[in-house]
Amino acid sequence: MNRMEVREVKESIFSRNMFLILAALLCLPLFFINVRNSHDWGDDFAQYIMQAKNMVEHKPQTETGYVYHEKMPVVAPPAYPAGFPAMLAAVYLVKGNSIHAFNYLVTLLLFMLCLLMFLFFQKHFSVLTSVFLVLIFAYNPWTLEFKTQILSDIPFTLFFLLTTFIFLYGSKSNRNDVFTGISCGLMLSVRGVAAVFLIASFMYHAYLIIRCGFQKKESLRIAGKFTIIAALAIVVYVLLNFVLVNVPSGKFLEFYSRSYQKFSPGEIIIQNLNYYTDVFQAFFDPRLEKWFFITFVSKAFSLVLVLIGMFHCLLKKRSFIDLLTWSYIVLFLVYPYSAGGFRFILPLFPFLLYYMVMGMKQVHLNVSFNRKALIVAGGLFVILQYQHSVAEIIAGQHGVMQGPQEPASQEAFEYIRNNIPENAVIVFKKPKALALYTGRKTASTVYYQSPDEVAEMLKDLHARYLLVNHDQDPELGDDPLNKFIEAHKDELQLTWQNSKFFLYSRTTSTQF
Image 1 (cartoon, one colour):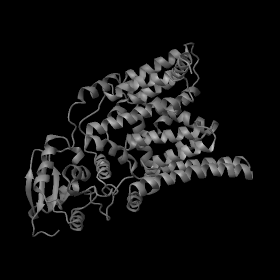
Image 2 (cartoon, rainbow, N blue to C red):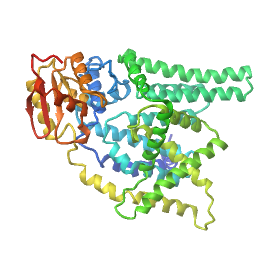
Image 3 (cartoon, rainbow, N blue to C red):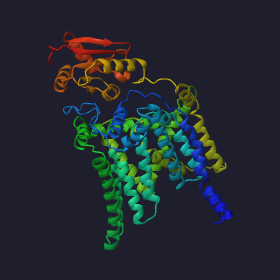
């Protein structure tokens, strides 16, 4: 190939990917906005980091320091799937326990998600619409704040969309089924809820078999495609979670099944419908200091347009996207935990934005404006509403968040490391964070426990130390432990305190 031909090939590649490159350039500022050195108290992140540390040090995944209480397994499972910890392990191997480095990893995954979203939207809408949809998602204050969380949700959303993209837009050959199955296995290894993709895929292939009239040859071909996807997904999951890294699954399943014991299905569904409707609308709340009617209009229109788009596609198109979306919605509507906020509906956002545009297309307005001009005006209108919130995020990104990196928290951790026996069990509202930063065994109360139930738990776990917050930090509020301390104050002694924490210990003669 001569120089002229090489140049023509390069120009052809650039021209075909010009708008993808543009989207990448527009998303590059994500690497400079809200990349922090500190984390908040939501301590799932600590368990992921500890599992990554265990991978690097060749220790069992369950050796996180957090003591799993089998009578009340509602704080966390003994170990999460290996997918996200494996990503963190690559960073930990180079940088150690660096919140800043982990933040860059999550930002990179978000950046990749944004580019994949652009490719997905481009399959359905114009380039201009696709670019603005990505920017509306990427620079929304919720997204910019959420990317500071070292959690599995952004990588899961990336693999959720990637698996769907390969499944829908790849070639129709068996090779594409292989890629879909591998991607699905990786997705399962990040979050178990990825099983919803296999469920939707099963229903989709069953529908295709019914539509072809159960013709033997065609039915076997369709069934074979699903079998390849499902079998490879399971193989990849087993390799990652049982062969390469051993993650016990029994108590993982027990942890999630216990969530269904205290609520009726009707109560769960109504509660979740109300909650996640509010969460979705909050994403489109620009948090303006003035012009509050814009907030009201943005929230109302976003929900209405998504619903119009969803029901239009369900009635007219009935694609795999609809089947997958509705399957996921049903799953989290019946799951009895309404505190996940934005993170639980994040995997659906590419599809919800897709439905929003589909809903807009069903609203016919007799206007003479140029369509491209309307897209630009509408996109800029939404993005410019973020200006105030984004400016606040940038201004505060160098501060220390309320959490483990605060000076008072670091002081408490140092005291515990230097003065509390290594085999001691400490009860604290955020046990996984305490275990990560002190190397001690930890446990936590549950919000509905009575003082007697707390006493029984302490006895079961042989817990001698109690760490409580006393500056009214809402993230660290622990009513069961405080009530227990009040009821048993004569049997406890204050071992240490600072401006934020009290550390109590039971006397050696005390038996709870």
